[in-house]
Amino acid sequence: MRTDLVSLPGSPERPNEDWAAAVLPASGGGGAVVVLDGVTPPAGDDGCVHGVPWFTARLGGALTELSGSRRDMTLPAILSYGIRRTADAHRESCDLSHVRTPQATVALARWDADTVEYLVLSDSVLLLESPAGAVRAVRDDRLDRVPPEILRSHEATDRLRNREGGFFTAAADPAVAERAVTGTVSRAEVRALAALTDGAARWVERFGAGDWVECFALLAAEGPRGLVDRVRALETAADAAATRAGAGGVVRRGKPHDDATAVYAEL
Image (cartoon, rainbow, N blue to C red):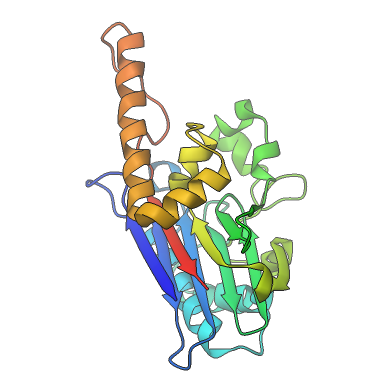
């Protein structure tokens, strides 16, 4: 069994808001991966005295513990309990009703000798590779359906955040776990898997450097660090091109270098 993990901040001036962990029981035969991507609020406006990195660490730690120790709980039940436990840890000090209360996307996978379970909430991606080399991307595409002009406005985006007809993230409401994309497949159908935050998935989704099959092959050959290094090179080239297009003026765009996290596991 091989497991590789990398998580790099988008900027050395900002803390990494991603979280990643792998669970490999000593008995062998089973395991889990947990990946979270914290949602950065504009100007730190989230009603919380702790901040997003604290939130992703608390929620990520809970999900990691429960995924390994509570095999009797489904992944939605684990996410629901983890959200509740995290909310209880700062309910007295923070405004959890704030629309931008700390929140995160989630990608979970857990396996044993017979099955592979998965859960994806919001725009992180889970990749499942079959023994024949086919790659299935498990995605929650609700954010993709939001028109770009809405996403350019924080206020308009907030009106769709954790709302029917919009998109959902793990925040303070445990019931959101039932909104996740979930499933179970036979372990015999999965040779390896990977979980990516959108910062790492940019190689496919923003830059079109390859498809998911090629992305998975890159992860297998060069590991998660190889994928993230390639994303960083593409981001740098895109920034340089944008600056040139602006006739020497700096062209600003959202998160030129996003936090990027990838976990690769061969079962």
